[in-house]
Image 1 (cartoon, rainbow, N blue to C red):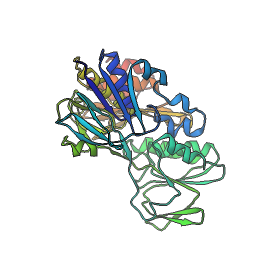
Image 2 (image 1 turned 90 degrees about the horizontal axis):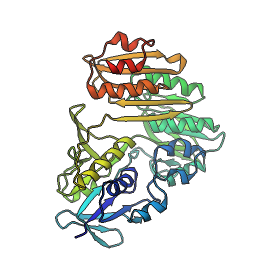
Image 3 (image 1 turned 90 degrees about the vertical axis):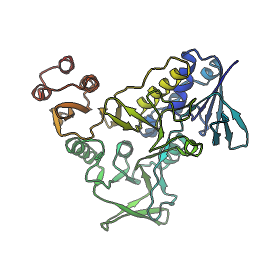
Image 4 (image 1 turned 30 degrees about the vertical axis):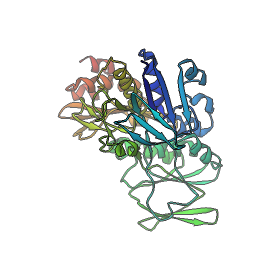
Length: 406
């Protein structure tokens, strides 16, 4: 008897899940449901090349439309799943239809964390998560326009770089003492702050936004210390909230994400989850993690599909991320939580260096700026939980490949 796998979510994880189901030999019915009106597409370019207008929308798609027809995937776009009955193996759609399934993959992703200050409902305020969001923002990216970015993380700084190069007057307002404070050490944060200031970006750190005041067709962004910043456009990038409501209402265990095991199985048999919405066990770090990255979404989707097809392999990946700002590529492997030492390899003044994060002599993570070889070497060292000779690590004369071999 043919089985049905239902994939809820049309993002990176959902798109990969249907691809991997077929490549693993699943021959039953596959239904892909996406709230977005577009086929699954890459999100990272949204704050980079697509925002800048240098990448056409057609090149965002994970797979061309013909793929889904050839792979016999029933695609339902612009549709939301409003209810799920785990025991009855059934979901309800926002148009009232009901669908039955044998296996389910929740790839519901996340949504931008909203501002909670006064004026958060201002029409001048935007978030960036979808193609539609970018199209609404891009229409306002005019040379000389005043852009205020609330949040100095990856998204905020990537948008700042694009906007500065387009001739906008850009201000970044960050609540933490430095930009990228949650993910990098002070050396790396200061490097990126300097690069943005060199490009004409104004940066205000340790500044909490208390309100957005409309002033005609423009606005003022107000902070707790009494500063105000004039804006023709405001974009907030202060984090992501995982979309767990569907799972939680159906009795699936959730804790800062949909809880899954090493095979991406949820607390309900036959229901799996993948991507930004999940919290999973990490063998590398000995704790549970929720990650927001393309790599995690792809690999978890592969893991869930393999388990459904009877060829289960545990998810044991070293996390990695990247960010493009101006001509700088920041590649991060691992997580630096709990580090007690930072080793800088190379000279930041050359705009090519790496910051290695250690704890008790073992490598936790690396931030590699225009240093792809160090990035690749560190991925192996982190996975091996290698004890590192700090002097060799700092010595730029020793090839990075030699570090991994030891």
